[in-house]
Length: 332
Ligand code: NDP
Ligand code: GDP
Image 1 (cartoon, rainbow, N blue to C red):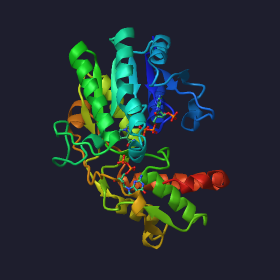
Image 2: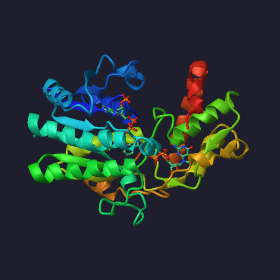
Image 3: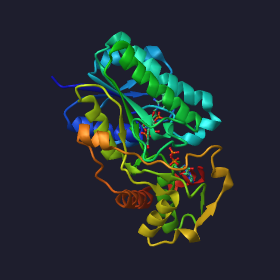
Image 4: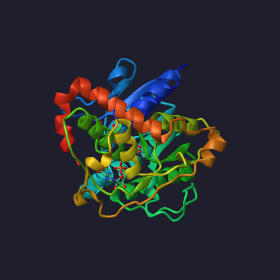
């Protein structure tokens, strides 16, 4: 019998990589997709005849129960959320509904339909926020700095609580930033790789940026979905930090991305104070020793390789679709 998995957020960056990974591992893959007036399946277009899509929304409990009944999964990966930090200040209540309460709705649906289902929750290094030690481990105290980080922390503790209250196999992966050519265009690495491609193609001559000194521990999304799966294959449910252990600044991203295209970022970048955040997370760096030891996991793609891959991919994308994408350039 083929194993089945249900992915919420399958149309997102991680959902698309996880679906590929699970299909290769011979799973039957179901994806929860919310209704939209325009089709939004770009990242999974190449998988459309291989995955089975089920309409539903984290805001709607009965749709979650129906999705579980229909897919009968052994594993559920909850990747859906409002995932962009700045939007969490402009839409804090909605962020709480999706990113925080959405986790409880899904855990409740699993508890009622089949509490033996193994559950993965997409927790975030943003929960560490104003970091209390460096690098951050599974034991580091949380201090979130945005409505997004706070909503994720609620989802994280709910996952722990369902494990402890009901004995459910519920795990939380505390993932540090991970990127790819499929990253949303408003996140800093993709914003930069896309701008470099536009500048190189003569479509743009300036790039507005926020805080260049912020540091993140950036890895490759394709590596990180493997860790999600590994967590659900263990004997006991536990939480794991997934990271590279190396931090770089936003300025480093600019240097590497522009340098990859033979450009000097200082000639193009302007600081826009409107892009600085009400409360910043200055520096994140993860210690993934536990994942390495217990899951046998380690990142495969370096920061420099990752940024190079993203710039090359955006150059290629622009070569085929430049006219249709100009509107995205004005996004913050
Ligand atoms: P994306 O923003 O690319 O994808 C988010 C997904 O959630 C999309 O498929 C979106 O659907 C879906 N979604 C949003 N709201 C709802 C809803 N109400 N009901 C159903 N689906 C919904 O995120 P990533 O793939 O980058 O990240 C995956 C998860 O991991 C997220 O929870 C994110 O917060 C978390 N995370 C990500 C990190 C990263 O660096 N990428 C780091 C740590 C955690 P639609 O396409 O319709 O908008
Ligand atoms: P986050 O870590 O989930 O918030 O991921 P982002 O990619 O959105 O941001 C990473 C860091 O880059 C944060 O510290 C931002 O303040 C910083 N940053 C600096 N300029 C920008 C910008 O123009 N856009 C975004 N998204 N982030 C920026």
